[in-house]
Amino acid sequence: MLFIDVVRISTRSFKNNRLRTMLTVLGISIGIGTIFFLVSLGYGLQKLILENIATQDSLLALDVTQKNEAINLNQESINAIKEIKEITDIFPLISQEAQISGNNLTSSAKINIVHPRFLSLEGISVSRGKIFKDDEIDRIIISLATLQLLDINPDDFSTTDITIRIAKNLSTKNNQQALSKEPDEKEAPKSVEPIEYVNKTYKISGVVDDISNAYIYLPDSSVSEISFNSYDKLKVRVNSTINIERTRSNIIEKGFFVSSVSETVEQAKQIFSIAQIVLALFGIVALVVSAIGMFNTMTIALLERTQEIGIMKTIGASAYDIWRMFLTESMLIGFFGGLFGVITGFILSNLVNYGVNWLAGVFGGNKVSLFSQPSWFIIFIIVFSTVVGVITGIYPAKRAAKLNALEALRYK
Image (cartoon, rainbow, N blue to C red):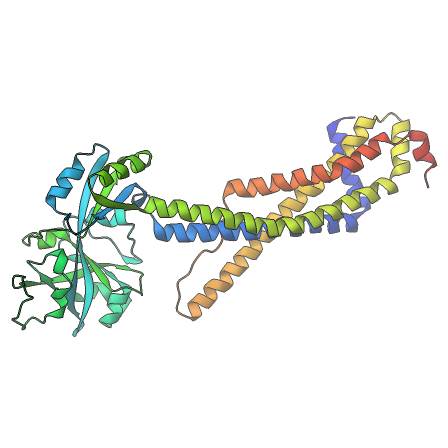
């Protein structure tokens, strides 16, 4: 018997028992749809969080800070770290608590003086505007929380000037004292030279969607006339992710403390892998129940078609043909159950995502994508459902193939 004939006979049995076939496919669809929905949620949350943690550039970066007070981060430190051949770039960070003014209001915020390339390695992204370039020395990146401090409408950020009072001769060890002294206060901290300030006015280039922390990133080229004797952090770029661990060890040997986003990403991936397995197990419970129902359906179909099997064997159908016929039926049920399960899970995930984003819009939150369905996962889930169908149909198919033709004809 040709395979096309096997498929034709199998699909004919579906037409003869449409309701039972539909209910069986529906049962498989519910199980597969549940797995698809829950695992897609796991992938979506993983993607959402990892996108906020890291960018492609930041995965190549190491954060270098001083291990103790005895070791300073300065130009000598940069020169020492540059000796490691796997390192391609080093960008320092200078942070101060500074007084800022704009929109006729004055407040305080953390200012971060950096090279533009530092921002990509740090994984900074803007929701409005753009990242400033090397030659844009009068531009800054500002957080949404800072705009709120100055009562600036985020939609009008590009039309507002921001004035920043920067300490000229401030060491990073005593930078917390910069804000505590007003411009007209003459008294300097003990054992520290008087702090001098310079006022700089900037245009806002972009806004970071962060309402929790007030900070500003400004280009180091805009304060090139100011000398800083130490840095708060060094952002080190490695030539390849393969060399991250080796480079990290080499920097640690030089007496510095090193951390990286890649460590956080790996930890997050491990956590989400466990979460996805747990979520999939809930769906598998539903699938097992559906598979039992499918097994019951195939067994009943065997009993109902016993005489038909006897007739087919008497006119020349082999046991192998009967086995293939039943196995094809179960395979098709599994395939269509998987296909409709994926469609059901996809529709349900989009409805839930729409509802969440609608609520976020009502309460002033940001839109998010809670679900993610990689192409390989969609293919895998359909193949998995088909395999479940085949496994479920093996026993009924084997029983059908072993039926004696004469006994099958006498069966009532």
